[in-house]
Every structure is written in C-alpha cells, then in structure tokens.
Length: 220
Ligand SMILES: [Mg+2]
Image 1 (cartoon, helix red, strand yellow):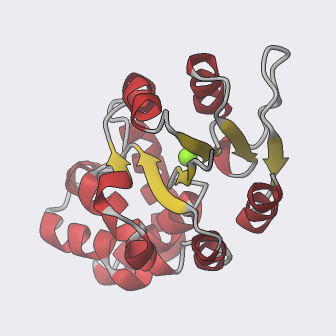
Image 2 (cartoon, helix red, strand yellow):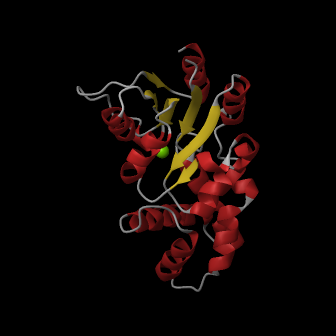
C-alpha cells in the first residue's frame, strides 16, 4: 500500500532564523526612529524583547512597540514597528538559505509539505511566504500551543507517512508517544541546539540543516 507522504515543518529555527530576524529588526527600528546610539539601541532592543518574552509566549510587534516606548519613555508608532516587523526585506533575509531548495526537492519527490508552528498568525505567515506556492492551506497549522494541538495533527495524518522536522526535541518526543510510526527529524540549531537526546527518546535522525533533513527523508 502506498501511503501519501507529508513532511511537516516547524518555522522558528527550522525554516527561519529567528535570532537573525530579531537582530535585523532591532537595527532597522533603531535606524527608523533615528536613535542616536545604534549600538546601545541593539542592546536595549534585545533586553526589552527578552523581558517581554517572560510574559508573552511569542513575538507581537505592537506589544513590542509598547514595551520599547515605555522603556525609552518616548511615544513610538506601533504601526511603524509592525510594518517594519512584517517587511519582506527583513523577513526574507532570515529564511535559512537552503530552505526553499529543500522544500522544492521534497515536492519533486511527491511529498506534501505542511507547517506546524506557534506564533502570531500574521508574522508566521510572512515567514513562510517564500514557500507559499508549495503549501496547501489545509496543511498549514499555526496554533497557540503545539503540545495541545498535537493529537489533532497526528489524527489528521494517521493515514499518511508523516515526517516531522523540528528544533524542539520535546515536540518530536510527544509525537512519537502518540504514534510511533511518525518519522522524527531533529534539526539542531537555534536556542535549543545545546539540548541533547534524552535517554528516553532518540529522534530518527539529527541534522544541522535542511539539506541533510531532505537527504534522510528521501532515503528513508
Ligand atoms: Mg522552532
């Protein structure tokens, strides 16, 4: 029996270099608001971001603008910050360079492509806009909580050959607990790269970029 094959990608630190994005974003905001000491602003931007992340799980440009305004004691234009956050130029330069090619290679081998990510819908959509033509709406899952949504995802693809690519080992582990036939590809980069496999769980493969992930998937 030939099952349909689908590869589901996480976004941040899997397809998209979120740290790089943040650095570029902060620099650009500093320039736009004509902050005198840009070097100092880079530090402020990062500190405010990290502080905000303690109370809000994912990046929201309007909240970020508010926090920056409070910190600097100036009145920043939230819409300007949002526009910079969503600007194609800022976004596109942080998509991992091999990502588009990797997705195309899988499409050529008749894999369907899906997305499984948390985050603000507008921002996450912008991050995957480069791959839009390879994605079908029904396979894009941008949700609040991955662990909570996971049972639905597993159920939806129970008749598929399902591959999951994520930088978060915990998500892959949770998926395998629900369905041991899921193929797990751990992409070891970004803020969780220093984690190590647990004794309880070893992913099917550990890779450092998407080209390696595709090699594994094509040969499995
Ligand atoms: Mg991630």
